[in-house]
Length: 226
Image (cartoon, rainbow, N blue to C red):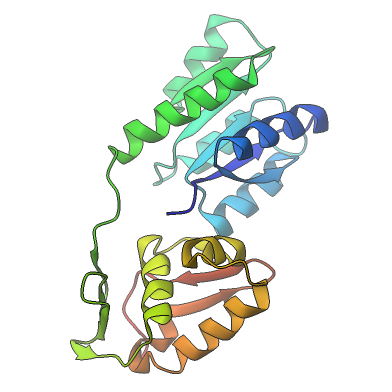
C-alpha cells in the first residue's frame, strides 16, 4: 500500500522543507500548512494519518489547533515546539498529543517518532484482502466486488482501484497515490479515466465515490444515497 500521509504544520519554510524531504525519503507522503487555520482546512479535507504540529503558528496557535483536532477525533499528533519548559510539554500531552519533539531536533529523530506513533496507532495491522464499507464489498483474493450483495462487473484494475479507496474509506486519496497503488507510471489523467469507468459500474453505490477537487477521490463511509 502507498505510504501514510503526514500533514506538516510548520510556518518556517526551511524546517518544513527539511521535514518533508526526510519523510518522503522514508516512504511517507506529505502535505504542508503554514498556519493554524490552513492546517485545520487541510485536515478536514485530507484526513491525514498523522499531524506534525508546531506550537508557534500564525492565525491560530498550535495548542488551539490541537484542541480542535481532538474534538471527537484521534488522528495521531506529534507536537513540535521551541519551548523547553516542562509545562508546555505536559500541556500539549494533556490536550491529547501523542508525542512531542523539542527544537532544535534531528529530522531522523522526527521520522523515528512518526514511525513509532503510527505503529502504536495502527497496531501494525494491514488492510485485509476482504473489505466491506457500507453496502460495498470487495474480495481481492477472488477479484470480485459487490454492491448491496449484487455482483459488480469490474475489470481487475477497477477492483484494485476500488480496494485502494475502500482501504482508506472516509479519507481523500490523491491521484498519485492511486497510480502508485495500481502499479502504473501513467499520468494522472489515467486515474480520472479509471474512476470514470468505475463509477459507471458501481450502480446504486455510485454516490459513495466523491471527487476531491484538485487532489483526488474519496469513498464515503456512509450509506449510499437514494
